[in-house]
Every structure is written in C-alpha cells, then in structure tokens.
Length: 527
Image 1 (cartoon, rainbow, N blue to C red):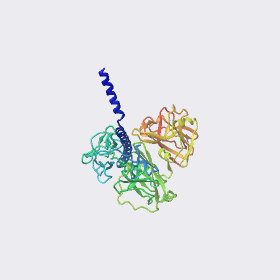
Image 2: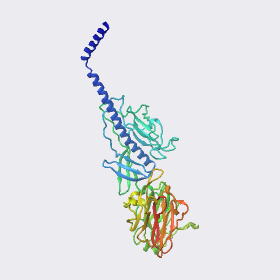
Image 3: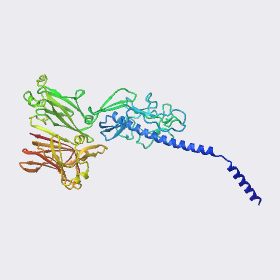
Image 4: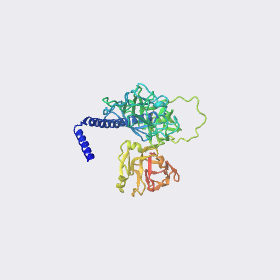
C-alpha cells in the first residue's frame, strides 16, 4: 500500500511539473536547425548546378585547346552559346556572365567561400583560381595534363601522356571536390596552403556566383568564326566553324581567301591542312585547268594563253576538293581561280625528271564534275525523309528534288549515323530490303552529258563490298549494270566507270540485306 501511495505521489509530482514546463525554446532551436539543414541542402544543390556550368566550360575550353574542330554554333537568348565539336560532343558555354546568387546558407567554418575557375597554362596543364582569376595554382599542387586525348574524360594512365578533363562538384559538407576519372571518384580541392576549399558561404552572405572562364564569346555567321576571349586575358581567339574547321587551303602561311589570279599557263602550289583527313581528292576543275594533288600539296595550273579567254568567260570559277575525315565527317574545299591574261616568266631551272604520276585531270576542256555531299545537303536544308519510317511510308513513290540545278528522284533518307567515337555523321541512308520492301535508290532526272565515272564514298564504319549495291547506266536505250572497282572487296570508296555513249543518267540502289550509308556521290562527265 505504501508503494502504491509513493507511485501516485510521484505521478502527481511529475504531472504538476510538466504542466508548468515551457519547451518552446527547444522547439524553436529544433525548427531553426531543420531550416538550416534545408538551406544547406538547397545551397549544395544550387552549387552543383553551378558546377555543371563550370564543367561544360572546362570541357569546351579543353576541346578548343586540343584543336577539335567546331562544326556548329547555336546562340542562346541569354548571350551564351551551344558549341558542337567534330567529335560529336556539345557544350553550352557562358558569355562572361555571373550566375544568379543562390540561397543563403548556414554559418560555415572560418574563411571565405569561393568558386573555382579553371584554365590551361602555356605548358598544357590545368590551373585553378579561387580569387576570380587574380592568382592561379595547380589543383592540389599537382600538374595534370589538359592536352592530348580529348573527350569528356581521359582514360587513366601515365600523367602527361594524355588529356584529363576535371569534373567539379560539392560534397555533403559544402566543400568543392574534383574528379579526373569521369565522376567515378572525387577528392576535395585544396588551396596552396593545403586547406579544403569551401563552396558554402557563411549565413547571410549568399552564394558565391560562378564567373565563366570565357570573358567574352561571339559568333560571326558571315565569317563562320567563333571569337573567344578567355577570362583574365585580352587576346581574341578566332576559331573557324564548319567546313573551314575541318580543312582549309593555304597559300604559304595564310589561308586562301578570295579569287586566286594566275598568269596563262602558270602553276601555283597550295597546302591542304586537314589534320584528321582520311581521304582528300580533286573532284572538280574549271575548263582548261589542271589540279594535281600530291600528298597534301595541291598544284594548280592555269590554261595556256590560247585557252584563257574561253576558260575565264565567267571571270572566276571553282576548283573543288572532297575531304573526308577519319571520323566520317566530310567537307568540300572550293577555291575560285581566274586567268589575268599575262604570261608567266619561264622557269630558269626546269625539273629534267618527268613526273611519273599520270594527271587525273588532263584539262581537255570537256570534263566536268558534279558533287552531291550529304553534309552540304543537310546544311542546305534539303528536305528528304529523316528516318526509316518516313521512307517506308513512301511505298513505291519517290521524293523529287533539285540540288545545284540537277533534278533527282530518291527513296532514301538524309540523316546522321553514329560512329564508334560517338560522332554523328551526315549520310544518305539506303536501307536494306527487309526494312524498305520497295527498295532504296537515287537517280538523276536531269542528264549530265556523258557520265565518265561516279565515285561513291561510304562512312568508315560502313565499309561494304561493291556487289551489294547496284549501279545502272543506259546506253543506246539499253539499261546495263556498271560494276564497282571494289566489287568483291569491302571498301569505303567504290568507283563506277561508265560506258562511252551513255545518256548521262544513273540509278544507284541497294537491293541487299545490309544498310548502306553514303557520304557523297562525285560524278565526272563530259558535255
């Protein structure tokens, strides 16, 4: 009984105490702690978004430093740009702008927070700045190579042998981290004193906003150049965009610009600069002109004096070269040439050794060339179907279109195909018969005089035997098959030599059970 009384008394005592106890301060502290945790999480999430901007700028800067060709530039309303490179990668870069200020964060450790800026030094190593570009140091005191193998990330290997792409992030405690293996592992960034670098700022200060590594970026569609000024510098880098980024013709040390003037019968040499070219060939010369390509040197000879008047009736005409890169991208280099009517000085020391290489363009005044390049057709907005289903839906009908004054009918796709390195390459896609029962083909409706030969170039990872395809000519009203030079061999180039007296029309089709991806058709003919 005493024990029961003691228990009731204790219960009454506890009840009396609890009724008078004020726990609002503890609740406020708990709620404040929850708010700070939420704010920290929001701030870290915001900083990770800023890190994505930094990573995009870093990857773009590395691609530019490694000389990766820029194939396309798209401007955004906010002044930034999406830059597409020839390796298939695209990056959105800021135009010297700072990001919006993020949410306020909780009180952090002593010392200011900062947002890293990255650059590549003169020796090709990454450097980082934590004070807006005033001072620079190597990340965590280590020299990490930026040049060499490009891509979003480099394969792990010996330092300096290839390029690595840093990826920045923020850890759960609000510190900047860096990865050199594509985001598989991260370590904290440290300043020159060996201290971890904070990303989260003190309460009430607001987030540190990101300043682009590009001080300014502008694109000139007229000149096809991207003008870039890196943060902390004043030097303007002019980077070619599109075909000029893949290949260029040089006269000495300078890119070829404008009309090239020749004396009658004069020969000049030009250099083709295309570091990743897999195929370079002359595909067109004006009447009376000769063009011989020896390795990457192009020798151009103007017509003799008696032919100059006829050859320059249009004042300036185009000499054309097809350049196919190792990743499958293709471009056409064109140079305008004219004869000024003078006679060149005789060569005081002529070469007594004749050139054993036959001239593929003898300059008879009759041979002409016509090129149909998938990359140019896409860029020019040629409205052909872009996929299998659209071609299937055509049934046995054709797309009718004109390109450079020549009429065509086709049942094929104009699209892009992925290469092993991730590149998207423009192609005329001739689907196999199991996909398109009516068959895929292309034929010209405008005669081209007498066709001499047609060269069909396929993408590198789509090398096929010539006997998979069909090329048809018509001679004296009779249709007949033209065999490829590589009829029984897998090749990316198939040359079809036509019979004299043909009517100037062709039909190329794919009756096989394998897809065919064509970069270009180059047609040589006589009028």
